[in-house]
Length: 314
Image (cartoon, rainbow, N blue to C red; front, side, top):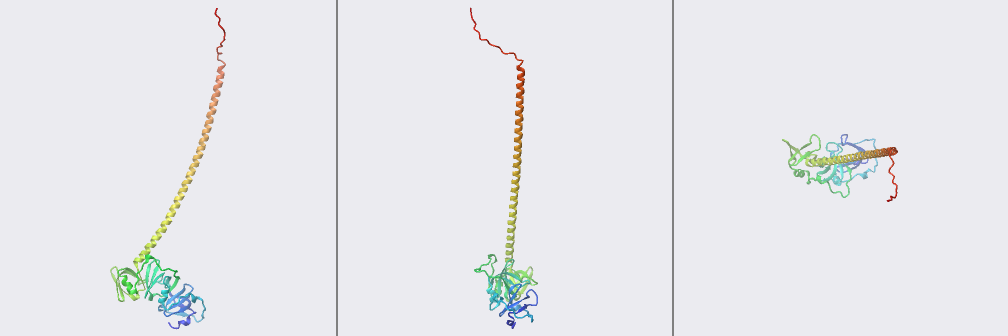
């Protein structure tokens, strides 16, 4: 599109409608991409090859904005993507191919994106409609997840040769989405087998590609993490239940000990009372016996009286 430089600083709409349509201020125009500042997505970089319309309202004048400092400048869309390597980006505004993730690598005609759900996805650069930055590259961040190791080749055709006999998914969604075994790739076509079908697909129309094995790894890892979280939660609940059970046991034990203690006190009290009763009964019996002795002592004859006398012999 020509003469778009004259619209820099103006409020415009990119696309009349659809998921890529956005209103904003045009910040920059380069050889094959535009930079638009939007309230919804911040700074968005549009691939000029896919822009079908740029609309400006005649009533809207020029807007002076300091947001030009926020945008990144490069000579081409390819160079822009290279500058974003290592950052977390959003591919497209919507639609079946829209994904977000970490930009792992940028090759001659495709990029490598690491998505949390699907693992590594290979995007054809030509089919990327727009890009926005979600999170800037962290300093000294040159590593990626080891579980998401990816195949690297100079261009997309060589990448297909490296993925021969792999189970792959072509495109993220839509009627042209397909999964199967990549049997061969020669020239401008690749051959994909799906059960008993043999599909010949033009390489030019492939928008994205991913290896199912990587996606299965990501799903397995996600399920494993969820199970670990569930297990930790259940273990915590079990510990809480055991703790509450021990507390209940302690309470029951204390109740039993209190009952035993009170029972012992009552038993001791009853024993003391019984002892007192026995002692009283014994004292009464002794007193009765003494009285009886006194009664019978009145009727006993007196004992013999011995008189000391000298016996004289004649």
